[in-house]
Image (tube, rainbow, N blue to C red; front, side):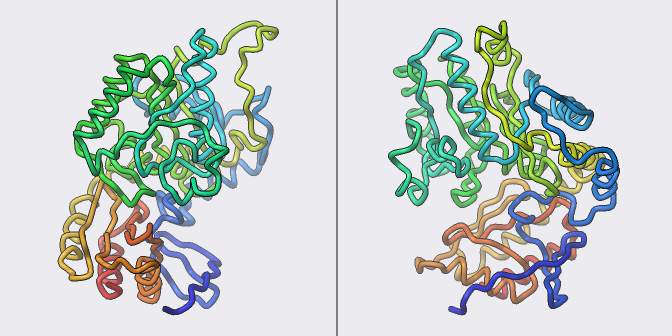
Length: 399
């Protein structure tokens, strides 16, 4: 296999990236799942420039600013019902980390100090900070850092064992709810696990069980949020309102680091009190709610509601048809799709087979990244018919 050499990208335009030699590549992974409307979108560029003329950054600790206020209000407007409070941060890992810490502290403040453990799915991935890794289930990330991690309890992935996942979850909640603070999961599809798509109904079952036994439901929509599944948030498919909603990646249209953890009014109220009570949530980031990121995030959300979300919905069936053709190739074991998120599993058991396929796809003018032996399709939601044709043709040629 040829050596993997990184490309030096010098500019982007629409759904494409250009390297220093002037070669053009379809951004088939949305610059790691975060680009929503394409590169150099004129309205996002303008929102960024307009804010830059006012202020580039001011701390959100003890202060506030208009872009942060407006974006928080807009997120609450589109989020599942009951989520009324927004805590900004700067990445998907921190969004999850904040939810874990707030859930833990909530139970301490409510006089239930034994609720210290977290439920999570097998093969879960929620980020690379220690708390987020602790509620993950991918051995590669636990091998070194295991002794440092928070205590979590595994539930089988419903994508691999639906009934087993429901039984394990129900039993754990029934018998151990006094020690479980929250259940954290990616809704509908586990991205980094290899695009594992859950059977319908599991998310709603999890919500019902967590409510029944007094355990928080933390939904990680870092990958699935902002139109990736065909709705603004994956929760909408099953009418679920979580206790915490973790957002990042597409929140700023793929322009700047930004994340948000949304919570209910009940959770927020537990942290209220006199200054001397020390109930506060002592957590903050230097660039929390960066005004530039919030300004472009607000415009990105407006674009989604105007037309990008509708374009994402229109892509689902053409992507399904393209995947069905790819699935007929002898080197393909199977395909999985949820909205405009897809994984193509290879038959090969060779190490780095996915890397080799993606390297060949690059030579066809498309940038993709594998997850083990799964080749991922995660294009911008602004994808056009001719872009999808290139994506399919490049993948077919490489396979």
